[in-house]
Amino acid sequence: MKKYISIMLSAIVVTTNCLYVSAFEIEYENTIKVSNTYDEITTETTTEITTETTTEITTETTTEMTTIVNNIPATPTVPETPTVPSMPVKPKSPSKQPATPANPPKLVNPDVTASPTVKIAKVSDISFNKNTNLFSVPQGYSLSSNMQSHLSRLNKNLKSKIYIQIDSIKKTITPADIASFTNINTGAIDFNKVYNYCKKIVDTYNTAPYSRKFKTHDGVIVNVPVGDYGWKVDMTGLTNNVYQSLVNFKDSTFSYKSSKSAFSGAQTTYGNDIGGTYIEIDLTNQTVHWFKNGKCVLSDYCVTGKKSTPTPAGVWSLKCNTGRSRLKGPTWDVWVNYWAHFSQGCGLHDATWQPSFGLARWKAGYGSHGCVNLSLSTAKKANAIMQVGEPVVVYYR
Image (cartoon, rainbow, N blue to C red; front, side):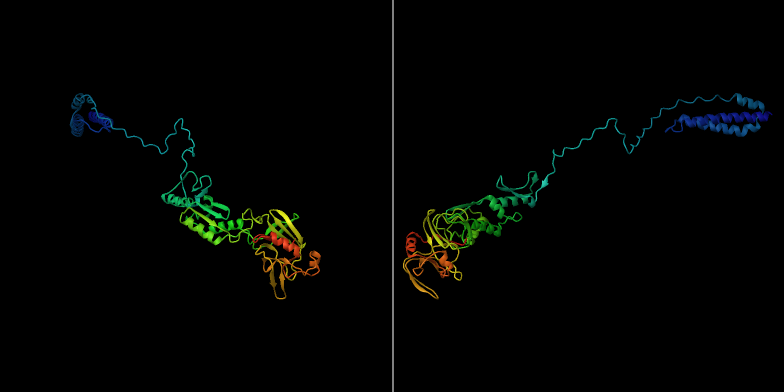
């Protein structure tokens, strides 16, 4: 029994010390540095308990065991825990999606007009500005150095001042006209465009050879075929001169005399260069009227060419106005007292072989070979008032 009690007491001592040590070790499990005192206490306690437990439990008597129990020192005072610096706290990793603020700012759409996107100008963006009379690009476009040089080259073309004087008519070639000649891609002057421009001048001012409307002595508007009377400008020379001035950036004035001038001496509007002095031959009614300064000063019946040899219709210039002349052809050879030639060997003259004049005589088949037959008295009067160059208007109604 004593032996049993001794064993139990020893177990209690061992258990008590073991609990103390275990508690001490758990408390300082995470301590970085432990003091020397702590090391000594742990070592001595462990050694003492192990030795006594192993030897004395089996050999000592109850008295000895009691003495040992009585002599067991009280639970040693745990030394004051040394101050250990705190470990720095590792910051938590931020979450992938930060928390939404309590009052998030409102998103405002940017003002696109405040800072517009700059557009780089291309050749296709260039156009002629009628307000400035210059080539330009739309507002807000940016020009590269190459584009700036190209634009300057285009505007250099527009600086030429060119005037065209045709008889009494003066025409100014404007910057807008020059812009229409210019190839915007290359900056070159297009010859064909200059040609077309000059052709418009010819079509506007030239009246020969063109058909035209004509108001007869009795107020009827008739269409008169092409003749040789009227204005006619050298279009080839005009085109070449204008083109050379443009490509060489020269200011020029070109004066032209039409190769065929209207008798009136002043060009007015298209088809109205006949003026107030002219000879009017009505092939349908077989009549002739002479006008001076807008007034009819002489009129009479006539006989014109037969259907097989018609008098040529058109507006012609009077080529001559003479006295006695010989008229000779394939089947005729005659002398006349007055002769006024206007076209294709045909003219006005006296025809003493005609017993009468007018539509009935012509319809009876007594027409001429193309000339306009007049009575001697009428031919004489006409010879006194006609002038070379005046228009002879020959028409059918």
